[in-house]
Length: 126
Image (cartoon, rainbow, N blue to C red):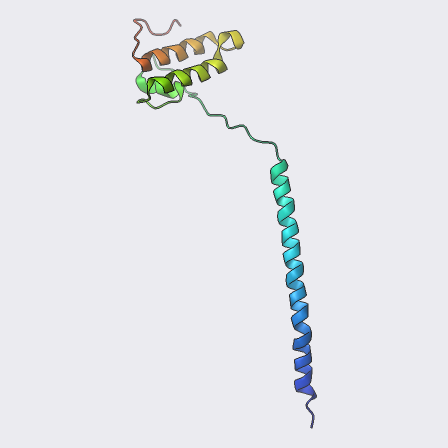
């Protein structure tokens, strides 16, 4: 006669399903909102320049091919075109007329000459 307990549990499960679905929709909406805000913040940040690091060590008494390659930022087996392009980029950053050091410019030129096979009898002017 008393079937209210089974109907009450049916009613509570019928009431719980829309509630759980509503929570899922709300959680999805909040996650989407957070994702959109994070993406906009990511796009709005200033771009970081991609600057290659150049050789920052001290110089050896006589320059080796390895040191020359490190100064120019190329491989020891680089072709002539790559060496010239790397030399140009490093010299633009360190040219004495643009406020760079004469010493560094002479080292960069020495590195280029060594990598291209042009030999100077004396190393650097300094």
